Image (cartoon, rainbow, N blue to C red):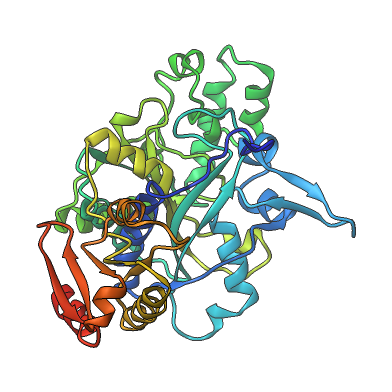
Length: 420
């Protein structure tokens, strides 16, 4: 047994379980690719300052959960705790917003890192698929992203998830609400760390999951009561567009999420079968983030969906994904001449796009057929010296058990025809 183990709070994806994660990533990405979103990939680490400015210096992500380190050259870097700031940084650096085609629509998939207390559904290394629409302020764009996420989840067979929706206002109306909320919070019995948040970002107190804090928040002023007319109209159009698309949602006036950059539309996907870690994804509009990290005004909206938690949600609902077999044909050679001939046939099948594997290691027939069964292959080709002398191989249908002799030179065409 190896001396080393995966670090605490992380996991390895290994076959066959890893096939589920690949299928989930593909299902989430599919509607994005069909809607004009192009793929982007950013480094696994960025400047600490990018996240301090963008995510927010008062957030738990930056103050407690970020993996930060100093390089040999003295640069302060951090493993990325989320994707939006990195994607926006990359888009600005590449001047994608100057190409004249706004919004810039991007999707991404990757690993993210937060130093948290590990538990089921909450890891220190986790996987997300995300989407960002950069450079346009349009309720239809917010609605589009919510609809695409709903479409992705339903394509996987999920049904017991809910969409929570709220508006966080903008720079016109939020300051008025912020002052009212601060007045309310200062009258509560809160610990010193939480009291400091009242001055820095009081909305973050609303996101506190501790029961002792939530009990005191009863009667707290709600942002929806302070929205300006423009924000009310914007939010109402988002709601109307989602409803017209047949997507159900719940208004949640207390939804703020844990990142400082959100404005106006904010939303979360929750699954009640996951216990305390019920959020499977979420996002919102972040109209001021570009300026926060040194760019021009670029109103934007996006979301990130957790691959890990989506897999847990599928398991909670008992949904079994229809995963294609990784192997369609398995070749079993008996003897050196058969190894040479069948290896050539396997190579030819692979070039034609047929998933084919080979019995390596000079196993006997019994051991090789066990491997063929484990591979999940639909067909097995078996050949020995006598078969080759007659110019044939034995083709076995692993579902029906039927076996027939096929000419060596016809086997590739025969398999291609049977597999479609």
